[in-house]
Image 1: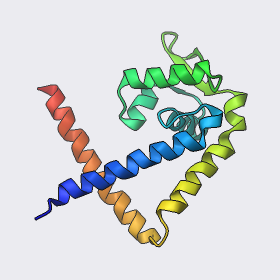
Image 2 (image 1 turned 30 degrees about the vertical axis):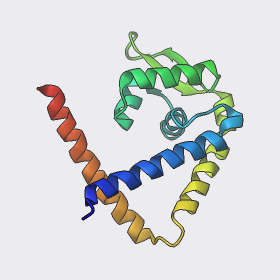
Image 3 (image 1 turned 180 degrees about the vertical axis):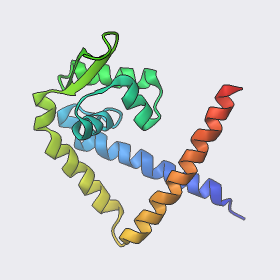
Image 4 (image 1 turned 135 degrees about the vertical axis):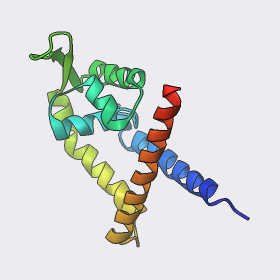
Length: 149
């Protein structure tokens, strides 16, 4: 008998890995990877943020966030500047170069969404998203409890 959780994990893993391959391929000429574009998206949506805010939005390790942001800065997509309200902290902002590729990134994401959601209704997508969110929040809660012990 098949294990429903194993099947769920397998399909989530496949979808995630194939998406990474797709993003890496589609944005290759821009030198933007699947581990970097997510930070550009949040900066497009929010303007200026700091590194800690970006880490907590995505529940990503601070070290991994720092490495991705350093690469984006080196490539000229983001810039750092002192936070006016906290002189010990730095804010991150998009550069002109990042603004020039915004439409391309969003169109790439839209194309992926259309590809994977053919014949899936909006209601089904909402239910999948809601269910995965609940499971993810429980997983975060459990791993946070483990880290506290």
